[in-house]
Image 1 (tube, rainbow, N blue to C red):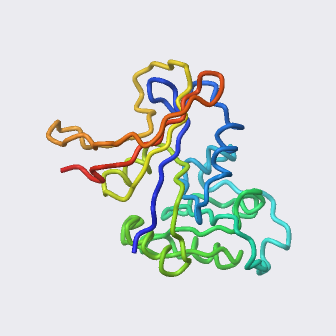
Image 2 (image 1 turned 135 degrees about the vertical axis):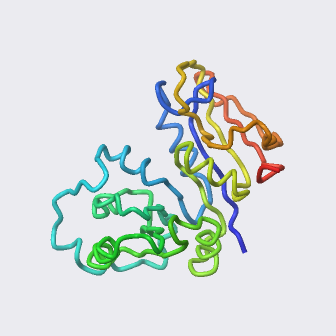
Image 3 (image 1 turned 90 degrees about the vertical axis):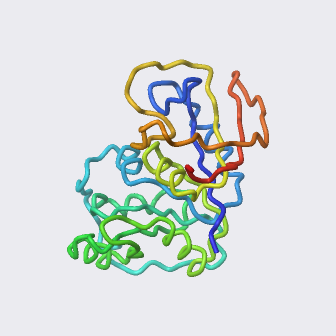
Length: 230
């Protein structure tokens, strides 16, 4: 059984996810009210958020190499990150985030053994799903069956959003639309795809809710009618 997957982004009026003054306090205030079991975040989004490059490390204390007790009453979501290339090496810092319970790394059979050993040494949970790349459909099914995940919030950029949308794995899109125009020609939007041959139909959406929050920011909630391209 698949969990409900909701894509969540703060965007400018022209659909950009960077280059404008996003109200992050409002973004996370709204997100904190969601009843989700997991937060799915792309590896590039994690690296950008912490201001580090792929493979960069932070100093680690001895605690990073010790098992961590899990509180069964802790209802905070799991942070799930696809990282089949082994780019993220700062898990001890990520675990300090106040809004997550634990982390789960999604790897593939192409993930270097050295990286899996790196995760094992730090007692970081991971799933191997897929061959050359992470199989997100399989991963979502595993999240449901093994971890009881019923609802997932996706906090990521256009690449991961694009994969989820192309594969029909997303159910809803929630957007905080800011009253700013960024412009530019780079594909820095919430939905990036290489499928540009012109024969693919747009994904159809149904408006489930619209609300003016503050400072002319509009909160839009859409349900996806066509979960994949035809």
